Structure formats: C-alpha cells, structure tokens
Length: 114
Image 1: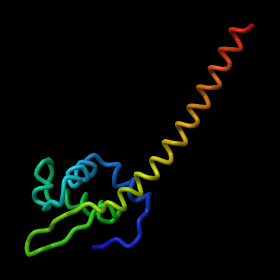
Image 2: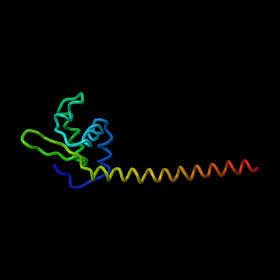
Image 3: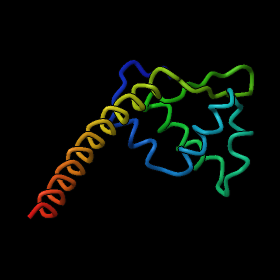
Image 4: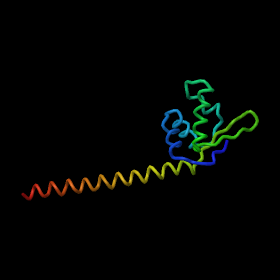
C-alpha cells in the first residue's frame, strides 16, 4: 500500500513506539523481509504486522511482495521531512537558550558592578 499523503502527526505517532523505532533503525541499514525484521521481538507475527502497518500508513516505510516474501524498505524522503521539522525546532530552542544565557550573564555582570 503506497501512502500518498505524508503527515508529521502520523510520522511522530509511528515513531512513538520503541518497536517501530527499532524497525526503522534496522531498515536504515537496508531493506529487509518481514520474517527477518520480526525475529528480534518477543511478539507474534500478527502483532508485529500491526506495527508495520502503522509505519507504512505513516509513510515512513513501504512494503512490496514478491512471491511469498514481503520486503520492507525505508522511505527516506518522509523520514527526512520529520528530521527537518525536528531540526527547525531544535534551532528555535537553542536560540532561546542562547538568549537566556546572554541575559543571565548580563545580569551577573551588572550585579558584580554594583
């Protein structure tokens, strides 16, 4: 199932679960068959497939079936869109922290001058 629309909401919902984050980390190394991806997890295949469905519906991964093997791959464009948003937020927070540090340093300098 190819996801036509990408939403940061669904991407971050998908990434909120540690199992799904582990799957994403594994897929960063390259595509993998569902059976291989499911091996490290202590859950049944139906439960694992639900995790894959959430990742696929979020647009972070794509799956394709060849014969009896379903293979998953990362969709880098959608993952980078989430990363871009996080980078923008980090820059805003860093700028605020820098302004606060400057303010505190100025206040301490003024207190020393008195």
